[in-house]
Every structure is written in structure tokens, then in C-alpha cells.
Amino acid sequence: MNNRFFQIRRSIALVSLAAAVVIGGALAWMISSSAHTVLGAGSPVTLRIAGNAPTGPVNFNEGFASVVEPLLPAVVNISTSKVVKNQRGENPFFNDPFFRQFFGNPFGDRDQQQQQPKEQREHSLGSGVIVNPDGYILTNNHVVEGATDVQVTLGDKRTLKAKVVGTDPRTDIAVLKIPASGLSTVTLGDSAKAKVGDVVLAIGDPFGIGETVTMGIVSAKGRRDLRLEGPEGYEDFIQTDASINPGNSGGALVNTRGELIGINTAIISNGGGGNQGIGFAVPVNMARTVMEQILKTGKVSRGYLGVMIQEVTADLGKAFNLPSAEGALVGDVTPDSPGAKAGLQKGDVITTLNGQKISDSFDLRLRISQTAPGTVVKLDVYRNGQKQQMTATLGEFPEKTQTAENSQPGEAPALEGVQVENLNSDMAQQLNLPTGTRGVVITRVEPNSTAAETGLERGDVIQEVNRKPVNNVEQFRAAVRGAANQPLLLLVNRGGNTQYVVISPK
Image 1 (tube, one colour):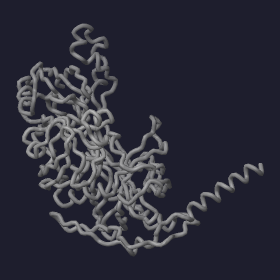
Image 2 (cartoon, rainbow, N blue to C red; image 1 turned 90 degrees about the vertical axis):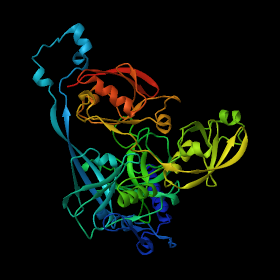
Image 3 (cartoon, one colour; image 1 turned 135 degrees about the vertical axis):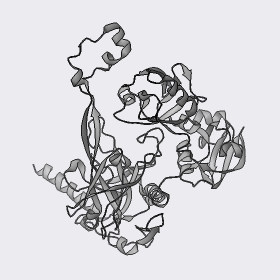
């Protein structure tokens, strides 16, 4: 008993000692922060940005209350709802016309009424961070995606209907606006200054039980290949062991100065659904860039080089006679793209961007995306073992180039609710498709559509419609229109593996 008691007391003493030596500045942040105004189409939006004034040591021997208390009113609960159709009691095999040809309808018509889709209202919870006293809120896109109703509950128990100002699925960031003023706000810090080992606090509303604060450290930075945001996402996550549970999404990750350094986004739960000590947050620098673009222009514009790139492994580094296994290997170049105009070729290895070293392909892709279209960039390139310099003028990433929403009159109803766009080299790389793959990529599938029920997903590439190749949106639309109300036989490529799918109109 005495030994056990001593161990517990010693643990408490060690934790207390560790907390006491944390270098914070929980009070100085309120003095050193400065205002930053975003000018857009509407009224100017002012954000509070952390300043560069030096901060003195703060004694956290009695906890982090001095940091947390000013922040709690600025972290809100977000409740969303949407209408979905739930197919009850349906066996997809017996509903397939090919199976019915051989087996008929084994259940007859007695269950037809139960087979009809039933509309249900689906509810979900998340968190958000107030960044402007007039009601602008930063949260995750997945918290509000597809929602028909968004409600925000403040710390004083007021519940207000929120408007979605804009979203960016590629970074999982969304901006909301509520009709309120004089609200408490957070100070936006600089996530680039966060270091592995820094103490951080996660604030949110897990499981809808109310505001909760957990403590941990920055476990890692620059997590870029997790594919949490899908194959087209841009990731640069801060990893933390501070508890992030369901409902914490969109909440605040702050440092010991009370500055926002990340938006809590995801966890690795190993199938259990709860926290396992591995959580991820979108760095506030990335979130701020996205938010300011949404507020200024209503959309997010990204730089575009037009090359398909891959990691430089040790073996590839030797094969290409490189000084080190760093940089991004060009696997393909989109014709007439900024990269093609600059002279980039297959087999080139890009090692620096504007004088800064490129660590890997994810690094280059992220930095190009964060550079404004029209920017002139300088590249160091190794070709056949020889170093040379190139200059490229970035284009705008073709987010909306030739998109097609198949809900127009005269088009096949079987693909209603499916949105596609031309497959380019960047998308092909992110989808792990072989070079030269042709088709149209699905960018959206309505949850209650026939296509969703059949199993089509965002990121699938349609290469054939009724045994006819489709290389672009125009060919795809023509093939779909030609099918009228008949079933569609699609050749679908998912991650480099092809399969045929039959979709029948409802």
C-alpha cells in the first residue's frame, strides 16, 4: 500500500512539475494580438491574429483555467439535420434484373410496400469556433455537408440558425454565419510555429454532452498521406494525443497561450469509434487561407501546374542519378498545361520551388495548391542527372471544368444525382490510376440516388457506357442520353481495378 501510494504521489508531483515549466503566455496573448480585416463582397470581416510580442513564463502549477476560461464562449455546438431515404429490407441481388431473369421474385409482391424507400431525418453533432464578433464561425466541411438545417448553440444557451457561407471539401473546412454580434472570439495563432512536444488543448462538444477540454501534446506535424479527405484532398495535419471524440469535429486546438493552431477534424479509432490517442487537426494557417478566400470571393482558387507526380524512392533516386531521394518525380504532363509550357517532361525530378527544398510529392502538391493562380514560380529540376532551372506561371486548378450534373431533362434518370468531370493527370495520380487512364471521374453522388444504392462512389472513374468508351464529359453525356430510360452498363475503374456495374432507372 505504501509503495503504491508513493508511486501515485510521485506521478502527481511529476505532472505538476511538468505543467509548471510549460512556457506559455496565457495572459500576454490578449495584449499582443492584432486585428486583421478581410475585405470581400459584403461587409469587412475582422479577425484577431496573434502578434509577435515576446511572452514571459506563466506558472501552470494550478492548471490551465486562465487559458481555457476566455476561450469557452468562443467554441460552439453545431447541430445539423438532413433528409435521407432509407431502403428497408431490400436485397440488392434480388432487385437486379439479371438475377430476376433466372430466379424471378422469390418473395412475390408481399413485401413491395416495405421495399419502398422511407424518408428519414438524419441528425449529427459537431463543434465550431467563433472567429469574428459578428457571428462568423470556422468548422469542418463534413460537419455541415449535405445539411438542410444548421443550428448553432452558444455558451449562453442561445440557439441560432446558421447560414453556410462557403465550404471547401478538399481541406474539410467550412465557414458559417449566425445573426449575432458582440460575440467572444478566438485569436488565430501561427500553426507553423507549433513544435512536436508542445502542450495543446482540444476544446469541443464530444457526443453532445457539453463543452469539454482535454490536454495533450503535438505528436507530429505534416501528416499528408492519410487520405482522410479522399483522393482529392489536401492534407497537412497536426497530430495530437489530446482526446478528440465524435462531436469534437470542428472544435479548437489551442496552444498554452490560448491561440488557435488547428481545427480538430478526425481520429484513428481502429474501428471502435472512440479516441485512441491519435487525432488530427487542420492547421489554422491552412484553414485561415481557405476561410479568407471564401469570405473574399466565395470560392477557393488553387494554383495548378498540370503534372502527375510521384514519390522519389531510394531506388528511383539511384536510377535517376539524383544526389538524394528527395523531390517529386514527374510521371506525366498534361498537354498545354503550365508545366508543359514551362518545358517539364516525364522523368524530370522537381527538387525546389522558389528556392525552397521539396521533400516529396505531397509537399510539392500542397505548396502549389497554396500558391495563387497567375504566380510565377521558379523550379529546380533534375533531368538525366543534370540540374537545370525552369520558370512556370501557375494556372487555376480546374475545379469546375466541364462538370455535368445528370438531372437535366432528356438525360437518363438512372444517373440522376451523379456529378462527373473530366479526369486529369492530377486526379488520376490521387486515385492511383495508371498513366493514360481515360474517362470521367465521379465528384458527387446524392445519398438517396439509384447510383448510390448500386454502390457508385465519389472518386470512381466511368470508362464505358453501354460498352462505348467515354473519354470526356461530352462523350459521357451523349452516351447517357442515348440510353434514354434503359438500364446503363458502366465500366467503372476504382483504384486501378475495373468492374462492370448495371444501373436501372427507378
